[in-house]
Image (tube, rainbow, N blue to C red; front, side, top):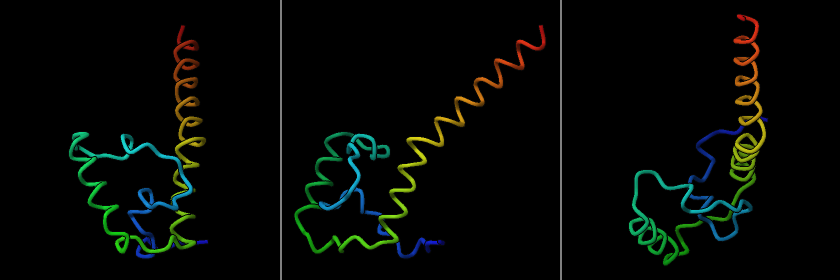
Length: 91
């Protein structure tokens, strides 16, 4: 099933009803902790900024989280082992 990115809410991970347990420290980009806390306080003051989580948004973020937890570490482990195997065959 294809999901159009226009239908995905980028603020879902900060939504009060988000199904993912992601630390705010992991989601900040080039911001200090003070800036992050100020921004989150402003965001949560006005609950009208949050729309109800829709199915495409939840699917997108749950798939992204699954890739982060399972597929990417497996690929890294495979590449690391392949490199070790290649270096052993050179000997």
